[in-house]
Length: 314
Image 1 (cartoon, rainbow, N blue to C red):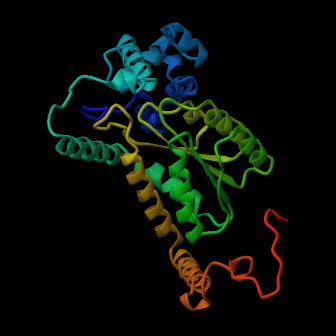
Image 2: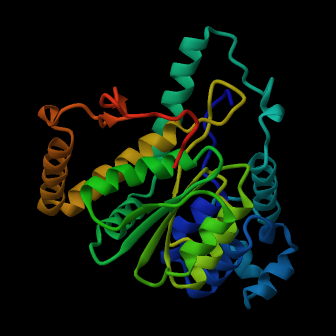
Image 3: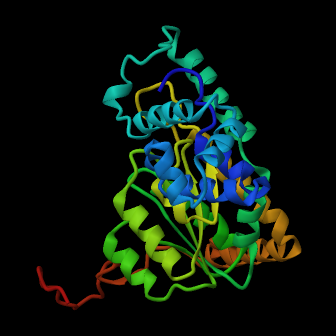
């Protein structure tokens, strides 16, 4: 979608300030995050009651986030809700349309979106995610949605070379259910979910969290509903020069996460990569001969006197 990258969401701001808040304001923040974003659209008194605190405490949190009051916070949440479920069709002819050449437009939009992704990324969250993925005592799984599944495959392809017990999970509900049977507190599930969010991914996150699985979520600035059960949330911008959301910033973020895992693993990671390279060389050594097997009926003429019958398959 053309235009400048999105400002930080209310959820991102809440996550940033949560550890530093007074206890009563923490309850308000957790109430808002647990039902995000619709919880913040409830009347002030309702939010205060759900957080077991006073309306004044809710107002103090709104002021702390930089809003002039609770109504302004609600307006921000309403805008987020509209953007969260925006379709490609709705993004045709959007504001700030760039009429320049597609190459220069793409360069500007994608570079700006990637830069803002890094500017707004909480470094502590990145470190926490890398620690979970580098922990040799944990099993790592990754899954994504219709388009973002390629990011899950990309991550696991890297982790295969760096550490054992890394698995890519296909996107069907049956695959999720089968995998859940063996998941527990020593598992880490990395999920990729971007607008318009997939129900299967959200349900998978909630079911895994109920089994004490650690959840690392890579999502967009408006945050997938799966963020409510995630242990780590890594948002990336999705602005693009076309009506279709871009995964370019998400790829940059993912490669940064891989770099952080490499640092965490240190010599153990280097040794495994060396072993992987040696094994690959052994399997694919050129002097092993042709890859296609030869023999009677397979890439070679049958011996003299051998009868062949068309259509005879075993």
